[in-house]
Length: 342
Image 1 (tube, rainbow, N blue to C red):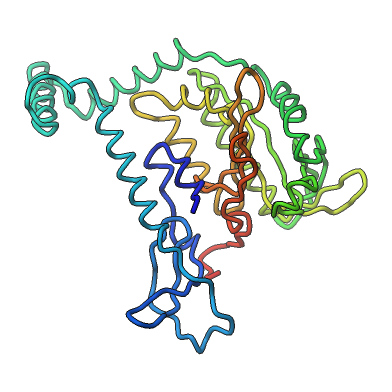
Image 2 (image 1 turned 135 degrees about the vertical axis):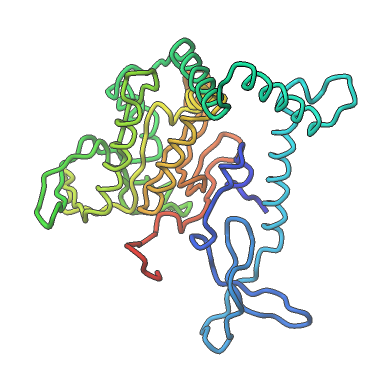
């Protein structure tokens, strides 16, 4: 069985999740009999106690007995890869273990800090910040210079699968008062996608151009963009299309220059992974409000792959080799507020 959300993971952060978001009732084997229990459809783990069969009117589908093993194997593979790529020190010709080498490195750092009367808590964060600034300020370049360019690319490359409405006006509620708002795109799947199982509801897309270079306002603009997308869904917004009024959105996607794999790989590649942590944290929060990210890969300036991702979990993806792949349909159907039990 295929598990796109596991297979596509490249870092441990990609496997982070809250099991409560993915629990579904399943029939599991128990001794010579069976029992009902909730299984996480992300990692395969069972959560909570058994549920009495008398309380369930329709027998649930059988549990996926391979999912948990696939999840564990992927974690081990990423951990192994991380260790093997830590540094050339790990593959030198001497017989010292990794722990021994790390202990020696710690002694060197402690000795330097002591000799120079500097606290390691001040030295290392400063070093990592300066490395990140050099990595970005001196090495970063992008083919994207504006949101207008991203708008144009989106229309050109996504119109194969979606009906696209550009710059749509609507109304939302702020402090119980109606406000006029505008969203960059509202899209709806074409028949080919819908027949494959894609939702026939409308989806919003908010576009942002994010420049990580020092002084270009990355943190403020990225956080505002995420909140903007989140507010479109939570404010009860309604949108007026040319031939349909009062449209509701099933979900909202963020599309930015970081949606392109080549660009995000470089921006997230500093030693402290600062921008990766910031961006993933924003998306993790937004995921609870049905806000995800459109991720894309290109080859020779042509779209090769796209995916709608929600905190690492894919709703749908497309690639030349596998075609359209349906992920977890539940990631766009969250209904949450406060500490409810839904």
